[in-house]
Image (tube, rainbow, N blue to C red; front, top):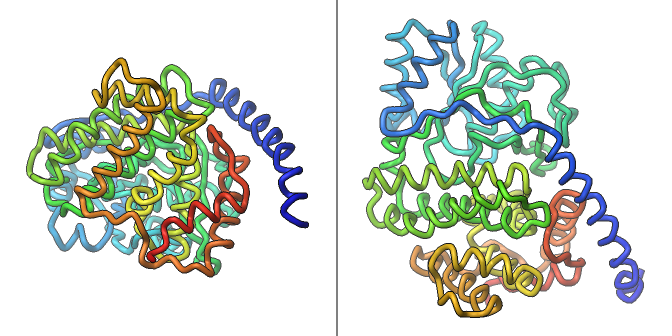
Length: 410
């Protein structure tokens, strides 16, 4: 099929995508989106441990990674569980971009020790792995059969989470992403049943994060908020959460990158991540995530870093359609003048993000990206985005390739 034929077909495809997105927006209004019972503030992780005991849990599987164990970050949590009479078993085999294999290993440990709940401690990877382990406890099907929309038929095992980064918002989202170890492709599970029962946003657990992790995870949260806000499925409530998240990030991210021990700023970033998670759970995401997911799958690029690099390029592409929405975010964050027009404010918002990346030492290009990989990356990104993300402006294969090529190191 030549490019002219593709161009004639694309408007028909866009019409189909938009129709499907309207159906998803209606579904989001009808299907209740649960929220976890939330504990906040320094020491809230210990309050969550006490709540686990009050709920009658006898033995929990702690899902985390070896780095956090070696840092001693879980010592107080383990002690509080023991003090309240709750036994625990630790699974610390979760790696970045967790795989089916890691999930099954955690599940085997849960079953072998007759656990009755799961406590995830860590960033997005341990929380996502814990969500899928919880789903597998009561859904006796292979993980591949659980991927996609609303395929977690039975209620998962009780799940409690303590995030140690402010970025993914996994503590409140209906999604979990794990990778197929054979194809290395990321496969999402999307179902309201995956939302944890309880979560603790404890800023005291985040003070040791190094600046490069702090900046990347913060940009991940910002991407969630911005993509939710410019989504065609945005609504009044998702707008409120997205604006709150964006403002908090703009006001606090540089502070915590410079001074990681700033508890108040860390708390604000944790709340921003939570609000952004609430926003995109209903309004969904966009091309930034579609592209960055595939950069992660292909090169192992950390998700927050990939989002940070891709975000300005996608916003520039979408600017014509999304200018009024970007201008509204710009005004909310006090960027530019109230009297400036939408196009000027939208451009200023994008340039402000580019300035943040420069401040944090995040280059606008990706060293690992290879020119010969661009067509396949674009195909995979479009496959993910279309019929999944209600973007303000659609792109075809050649447009997506051109966008990705801008990230090549020249």
